[in-house]
Image 1 (tube, one colour):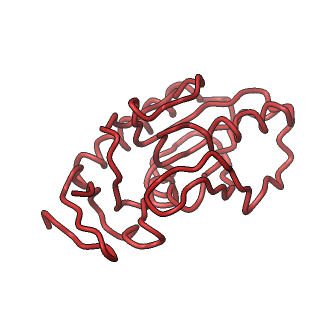
Image 2 (cartoon, rainbow, N blue to C red):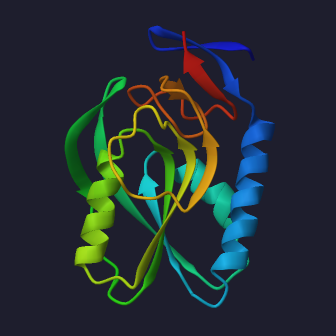
Image 3 (cartoon, rainbow, N blue to C red):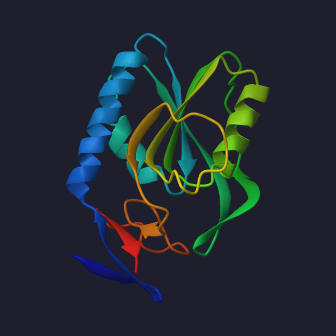
Length: 177
């Protein structure tokens, strides 16, 4: 499909499922190479990253574990500066190598919050994996260790990304128009 409608908004194709699969394959290969023998804990940021995390984690061949955290900083189509922790961190993290799996980094507010919290909890190392990055929206200073694709500062849906909870189920990614 070249265009879709989600609730009251129209979207057009931006990133195909094939392009996404290529990025996921490349990210997994880099992680498998770099984190061999590190026994990392993959920490998935819900809700948006669940599809990306599932696809990526099935390609991870190194010894590892996976867990989930749910944070929210979006309202409608825009990011807020207020981060809410909806499902917290329950694992023993002190001394662990953590790999955060995030679907998209735009302002960076949510990720700055999570990285700071993990470091405060005494983790050994934090690596950040993001499928998508909006450099023109980014307002923080942390580094993305493994990046799938850079995109313009446009609102998108599909492949786990949503508009008010809808549109996550598309295999492709669509931008608003």
